[in-house]
Length: 241
Image 1 (cartoon, rainbow, N blue to C red):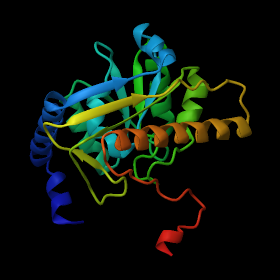
Image 2: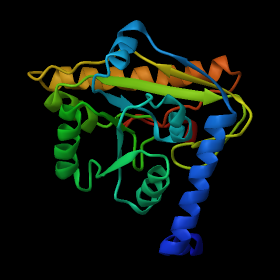
Image 3: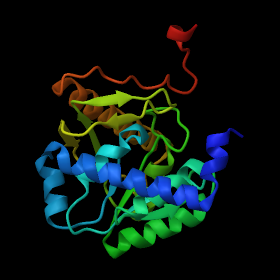
């Protein structure tokens, strides 16, 4: 284990890092000139304060503070992995609840809590390519959650004019202060309760396409190069061959 990771395992160090990171997110939210665009079907869901499952890529997490509906309880599914624990500490400072679990760890209990929160009328957020990728590829868990809960999925993405793209697995977009920002929402996806494997896969691909289209469009409109998804599972990465 590297020294920085060992330091983050120290509760005091982790608490300080989380406080600083939350302060940075607040700085980005406050100093960025945000534009938020939603299609009419999604605007109706938000205006009526209906529950939904918001999905965004792991690498765009910093910007999603600007997408949070005002006055709505939001709960985000976070992995129990070390990185997820740190993210949970950061989010706690931003008045967002966390649900611990992922497709690998604590999935069943997390799904039960997610179901209860949605039925209560709250908003649940999921990064469907987390916690470790592949980048910008939707895992099937979110589709199954929508099918079981009967709640719509809404794709959300965003970009900023001033940024740094890190070399992490998710090509994390580190927003810089005093910039312009764009948050884009797509039309809701409803997963029928009786959907079979073929339909579930079609809807998984639809969500993936929505998220990647929104992300590329937001980058383009702010004059930034698009971040490319990782090769689809099972595909040959010719660029790296």
